[in-house]
Length: 451
Ligand code: NDP
Image (cartoon, rainbow, N blue to C red; front, side, top):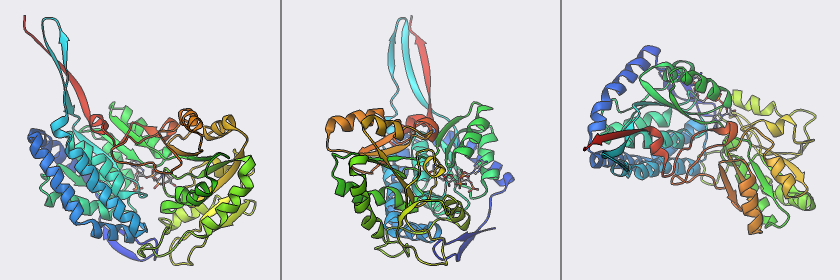
């Protein structure tokens, strides 16, 4: 049994059994057996089942949100959004089974056509920072395309995934088609990599583990989708609406206490407006409401664990130039105040590493070329923001920044109907959007001779 801790109170909220290697194998076998019947479900019926699953999630939004608040310390507002996001991706991909259209390609002497065949059993490994959405982004398109799914939540945050498994069963998703396996990454997650019946692994988490998974999957030429974090730039040009850029910068990085692969954790400000931006940023950071995540007005909760708290704190020492900080409650709970750092330069560890906490660095730049060069001076490439009122510059910089998800005059990165994923070491493949279900299929080409 593993104790599940509320990070805002340090109280034990549940005890969850860890799936053994034998039980993982048995669940994968059941998922393998269930493939034939799930594939044979008529497209309209598969779509109806996914819509019923979505309706079950919708009816359970408040319960799922409260579970997430107590397990992950997410603010209640964010947790409701996350539960509704699972409902929405299920509805969105419920349209897939009837629209997985192959092609008919003209060839002499016969008929040539393509089919999008399901891959088989898909293993999904979910991190602790967004337990519900990241699970849904994998299982909704995978199930819609006719695959069966085994899903491992993070050991720290299994509760909403377990509930989603129950809701799937209540909605009529057949046994073996969608199985949630709480447990250790080194046992359950690793078995997804090595078991030959698992044909694809979808992983979100650290770059280090992502690389191990990719290397492990190579042994069986197993398909893999990776989402591995970021060190995203928030570029503020002198010609932007500076008040708005400063007022929104805290949301861009401190949402979910900075435990967000899309966090804009490197603010780059044009030197001519640097001092003014810092003056505007200070009250905005002071105004972030940090505290009880169950309270409606709270904007930032605690970090996920004591261990993670220490990891984030380890980025700050006596020599760190902290410009200013927001507030945070005293313990119990793994609290860390919103923190703004003026680093000595772009190579400082706090600028290059994914801190994954409520810590942001601010650096000046001279001109457009300098801004692009600093933004791209990282092995990550997930997201970023560009603040400017010059439309030409907005387009030039968006094209030049090496990242999968950019927003101009906004920090918005995720919409379930648009593609999401990273350049460089931020990942491999894309989730969400119109093409995500195709990543759970193989294209088969069939030629029928007529002559
Ligand atoms: P991990 O990469 O260790 O964990 C992510 C998921 O992978 C968890 O479900 C974990 O299981 C599982 N896992 C761990 N080891 C293996 C393995 N060998 N084989 C298969 N699955 C495995 O992330 P951490 O929780 O350790 O976080 C460390 C850092 O990673 C963070 O500080 C942050 O920088 C980054 N991160 C990035 C995320 C993103 O959104 N891209 C999300 C989370 C973390 P278990 O629960 O048992 O550990």
